[in-house]
Amino acid sequence: MKKTILFTVLLVAISMNMQAQLVKFGIKAGVNYANQTGSDITVNSTNYQTDAITSYHAGLIAEIKLVNSFSVQPELLYSTQGATYKNATEEFRNELGYLSIPVLAKINLNKFVSLELGPQASFLLSERNNFNVKDANTFDFAVVGGLGLNITKNLFIQGRYGLGLTDASQDAQVKNSVVQISAGIKF
Image 1: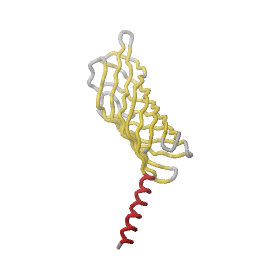
Image 2: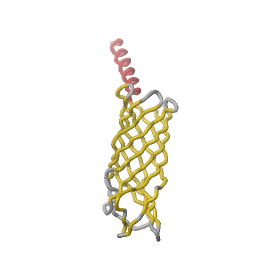
Image 3: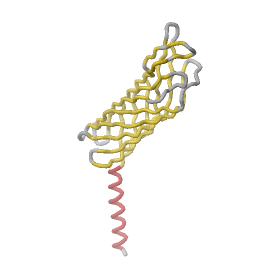
Image 4: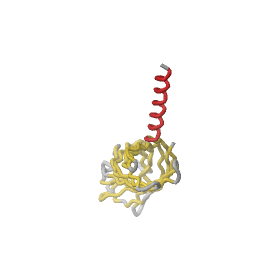
């Protein structure tokens, strides 16, 4: 009986150790360089040009290792995106706060560098701007891709580009685009 209990405890301990090596959790944060682009950028029938804004993102990550050189990395991020709109007479900033959920295929090119590609669904949580607009779409779908660099076993940095595929506004054909630079730690 003692041998059976000891064997069971040993088996559970080995299983938990193997599971810990297959899934890693972490946190990350960084800077966004975001813009909105499109063919018809108008507000109240006035045409505008956009300039990029600098903002931030932060959140949680999980890395699920499937084989040695391939893993899946779902993330849960708060990300601010938008643009500065301007014409000859006025200028204003439109900042959209999203809950973003990218699910990335992570291909490890070697021990230090990885390629990350996948879809991202974002849900609008807040809109901060200097004009009265309530036409932002509440859902944004994008594709993201970039590179990751492992500094140590647990510390990493990432560079990523996200291209919006759905319109960010109900009244204009504008799409979000964002360049993200992140740093994080895995536990």
